[in-house]
Image 1 (cartoon, rainbow, N blue to C red):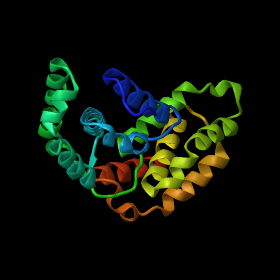
Image 2 (cartoon, one colour):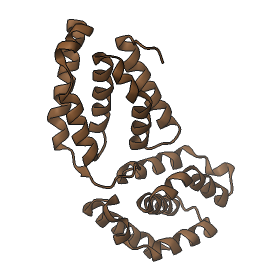
Image 3 (tube, one colour):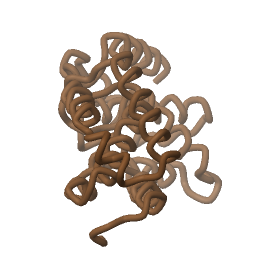
Amino acid sequence: MSLKWEYEELFESFMEDYTSYKNANMSDAESLARTFNVYESLQNHGEMEKAIIHILYGELLLKKSRVLDIAKERTKEDLLSLDLNKLNNEVTDEQFKDLLNRRNRILQEIDTKPLDYYPVVRWYYFEVINNVKEYFQDQNFETHSEEEFVNNILERFKRDCKNTLSENITVKTTLVELLLLNNIRAYSHIKNIKSELEQFDINDVGEQLSEDEKADLSFRIKEVLSKL
């Protein structure tokens, strides 16, 4: 990276890298964490760089369903630590006004976000449900056997299923729901997933899921098992 960045160039580069991680099938949380790690040292190059990096990080945090408690406090500290006099000297009046408005919006809204206390970056509950559904719908199961079709989906989410118990069980529950809905009888895979769901204890996910999410997942598992 160059020692000095243009204003728009840094915005675009940060978002391009974030999108690249997302396109590599990483969760929003992991994509953001990896992108921040790439740009973290750049904030030492100037107040403009520091402001842009922390503002983009904060804005992307606000788009998540929950915010890690440590990330929330760190973001507030970073935004409040910006030297506005230095920043004003490094950008145009219009850019300064834009950055200040965006910083203030993050500081106002971040306290309204539900907090996450589990420090492992992961797909959040409804994020992973939506991703499984989207990937499922994008597949053409008519060109594969039913077992191959399911195997392709499990392979796509293999990394996530190994990451946390909540991701694993949410992926498997959502997948079986979709298989039943579409009358796809991949007996071998369904048998294995059924065994996992029968042995699953919702208490084992701890703080990976909220109480409402635990209740929803428990209900869905009960419904799925009743149909198998």
